[in-house]
Image 1: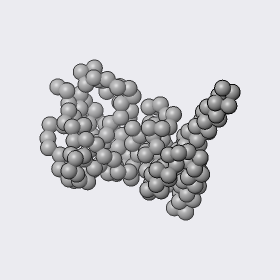
Image 2: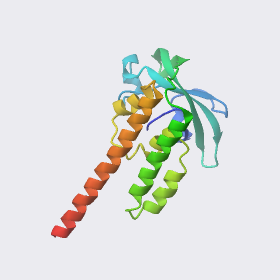
Image 3: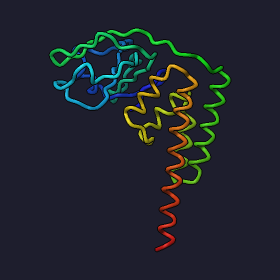
Image 4: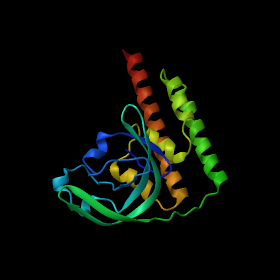
Length: 198
C-alpha cells in the first residue's frame, strides 16, 4: 500500500498482532516503518527500512474487527533495532516545504478528480468508480485509494512519501495517475482493435 499523511486506512486487527506485544486501543499511536522489500522478521536488518516513515493514530474499531487508523505526519526514523522478533525505533517529526497555497492544492486536486471522472465514463464500472472518486477528500487520499491500480514500485511509493516539497509530491501523484489513465486507454484500444480483427 501507499502510506501518506492525512488519510484514513482500515486494517484487520490481526495485521498488528505480529508486530506489537500490547493491546491496541483508540488513541494508540503507531509508527509505520516502511520496508524496501518483503522479508521475514528473522531476516530483517536496519538497512531493509527506508529512513522516512509515518506516525499514525488508531481512531476506532468496527464490528468486523477492522481497525481504523489515521495517518498524522511524516517522521525521520531513528535508532531502529530488531530484537527477538520485535522492531523498536524512535521518530522525529519531518517538516514539509509548504510551497503551494491552499487554493493551488485544491485546484490541482480538483483537476485530477475531473480527469479521472471523465476517464471512468467510458467503462461499465464507471458508475461505481465515480462514487469512489467523489468520496476522496484530498490529493493524498486520492492516490492512496488508487494505489492498487497504479504502476508504482516500492521505491516510487516511497519517493512520493519522501518528497519534502508539497509541490513535488503533487507532481509525482499527478504523473502516476495520468500514466495509469494513459496505459488503461492504450490497453482498451488494443483490446478493441483485436476484437475488430477477429
